Image 1 (spheres, rainbow, N blue to C red):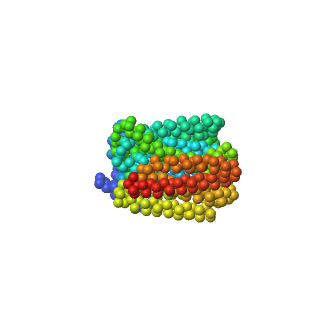
Image 2: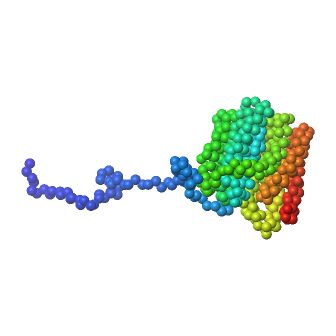
Image 3: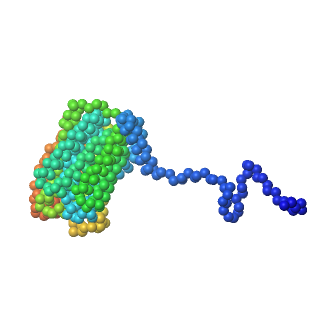
Length: 485
C-alpha cells in the first residue's frame, strides 16, 4: 500500500543505554524493573547464643587438636564483682535444687513418693561429703601449689568411687526394694558427678576465677533439674527421673566444667604417689569433721525413717529449706573471700584484723537469721503452703525453731572454714565425734516421744552443742598460736 505523504509519522525515541525507566506514580512496574539486591537480615544472634557458639567452636578445636591444657586463656582473674555475682548464682542454684526437685516430685508424684525421693537425696547429700573428702577449702587455700592439680584429681576419682560403693552397701543394708534402690542409685550417681565437678571448680577458684566455677555449678544444677522434671512429667517414674538428672549433670561436667578448668588454668605438674597419699592424710581430719557434721544434721531424718511415714521426710526437709538459705546467704558473703583471708593470715601483723573479720561475720549471720525469722513469721509459711500444695500453718512454731537451727549451722560452717584456713583442722575432729555421740540418743528419744516435732528440736539441740564446742576450740587455737606453739 503506498505511503500517505500527508500523514504524520511517530518516531520512537531511542533511550540512551545509561538511563533507566522511570517508575510511574501509580500502578506497578512489571517490565524493565531492576532487581534489588537481597537485604541482609538485621536480626543478630543473642549474647547467650554468641557465647555458646564461641564455646562450642573452642571446644571442638581443642578436641581435634588434642591439647586441652595448652589452650590460651580467655577470661581474666581477680574479678571481684564477677566472683560475687556468679558465685552467688551458682550457690543459689545449688541450694535451691533440692527444694525445687521435691516440689516437682510432690506435684507430679504425690507427698509419699516425694518423701521417698527426699530420703534418697538425704543419703546422697551425706555421701557427697565422702566424695568431696573436705578437700575444697584445702585446695583453694593452697596458694603455692604444694600439691599438683593431678594429685587433687586422682584423690577425687578415688573418693567418688568410694562414695558409690558405700551408697550401694547402705541400700543393701537397709533392704530397700527395687524401686527405692533405683531412686537412691540415680541420686548417688548425680551426687558423684557433683563431687567430681567440685575439684575442677576448686581449681578455678584457686586461680582466682571463682566466677567461672559459679557459672559451671549453675549450669550443672539447671541441666539436672530440667532433665529430672521433663522425664518425671513424661514417665511419672521417680527412678527414671533420678537417672535422667544424673545424665544431665554428667553432660555439663564433660562439655563445660572439665574443659573450662583445663582451658583457663595453667598445665598441672605431674602427679606423684607421695602427693596423693599425703593429700589423703592431711585432709582426713577435714573429711571426718564435715562428714560427721552432716551426719549429725541427718540423724533426725534417719531416726524418722524407722518410725514415721515418708511424708514426714518431705515436711521436715521443706521446713529446713528456709533455714538452709541462711547458710547459703552467709556462704555468698565469706566463701569468695577465703583466698584473701588466707593471705591476711599469712601476715603475722594482720592477725588482729583477721579476728575482727571473724567476729563481724558472726554478727552478719545473726542479722541474717533474724531477718529470715521475720520473713517466716509473716509471708514465709503461707508461701510454703502455696508452693507445695500442703498445709504448713500447723507447723508454724517448728518452722521458727528450724530457722534458729539454720543460724547455728551457718556459724558452724563458717568456723570450720576459718579453722581450715588456720591449718588446725586436726584439732576439731574430736569435737564432731562428741557432738555426734550426743546427737544419736537425743534424736532417737525425741523422735520416738514427739514425732516430727522431736526431730526438729533434736536437730537444734545437737547443733547448739557442736557450736559451743567449736567456739571454745577456736579461742583455744588462737591462744596457742599467740603464744607461739
